[in-house]
Image 1 (cartoon, helix red, strand yellow):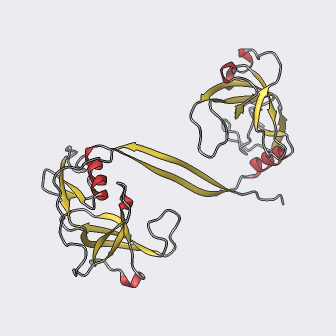
Image 2 (image 1 turned 90 degrees about the horizontal axis):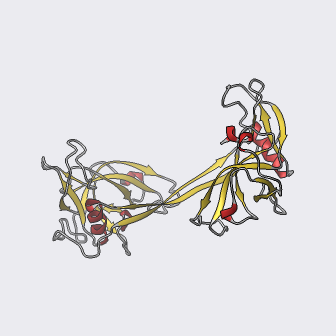
Image 3 (image 1 turned 120 degrees about the horizontal axis):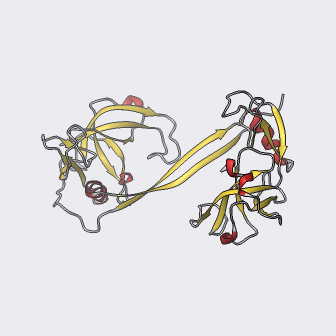
Length: 316
């Protein structure tokens, strides 16, 4: 039986967004140890605040301060915290209806164990030592018995803040293990031998690279392996002007669709060995391998005349 391939993969990018007046006030308030909600036309107070009433769709702008204390409405125990979660030790995810609010806020509760958590328990905000205007300015909630410490009521909101938070950058990340199937395993094995292998559909006779194990047009299984390339034709391309994080390639550079000779599907590849403004449709290219590379590092001009448009127009 062939080896089952698998590899850990990470998809990560910074998600950047601007804030409207309501979210700006809410996050700026957290920086100042103030929790704000927004009042609806029928008198409900929503925390966290939203810009439009989820029931009536009315625009909401009437900000109101609520207390940093509240009541747990429901909870779930997290016995194995993951990277990036609020606490590094086991904790409870809780929905807390803060005093003065009509909706509940989701956050972490620092508790010694699940037996110490219950619906209806009283809790209070534990503020982060350093705050920047983010939901993490609330480090977590903690049990509260009404004794000395965090005041039971609002501390006073005067209707505005200096230096408001106007935007946030939130990292988005997905860690997973990828295991290719039979067709892609054969394709990857061929790449490690500096060959490119696809599969031919027994019905339409098209050769797909990378192979998918089935024809996307006919829906039938593909098993006949076909070696293609190594040279190919640039069908379309784009010029990349923004440097990617953790990618040691200077901008600008060109990323292209390349139809390898003998293939009926264009694959992606970076174009090098030529000024970015000289890359063009129809350019004939060949792969460049690094010493230990398991796939082409990039493609460079092959020194051949450009391909005629008619020869690759169906692969655009």
